[in-house]
Image 1 (cartoon, rainbow, N blue to C red):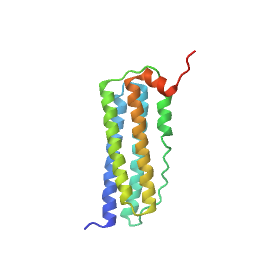
Image 2: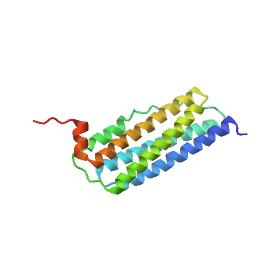
Image 3: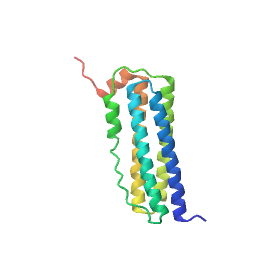
Image 4: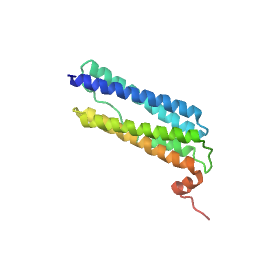
Length: 171
């Protein structure tokens, strides 16, 4: 039977792999994006996945060294960084390809899977710091998914999205 420590380390290994795969996907998708918004948004997501990896590595070492779950200084920005990256590159017209739409669909599925995994870890968590961490992380993954949904809608109909979200006034 696995100990609590082994179970937590296995979950952390899974989380590290999820974040590694996410970073690789977003890096590749950013490089292949056909527009500046996609390049910026996807690169920002890659950097967030990289940050998550670093946090998980620190937690892993603490648990492995039997120091217990550390207090983690992890305070997501509520998506403002992603929304800022998104807003800076908005234009009423953008070129999007089928590949870009498929990449966003894949990314949303990845974010949903990651969110679900972190929610499951939150339910299993015993330590208050662990619960707090997974709760914040799950919320950030959900925000990633919402920004990607916005981007997908924008790619499908930039002018319609612009009118719907930006509410420009007509004279």
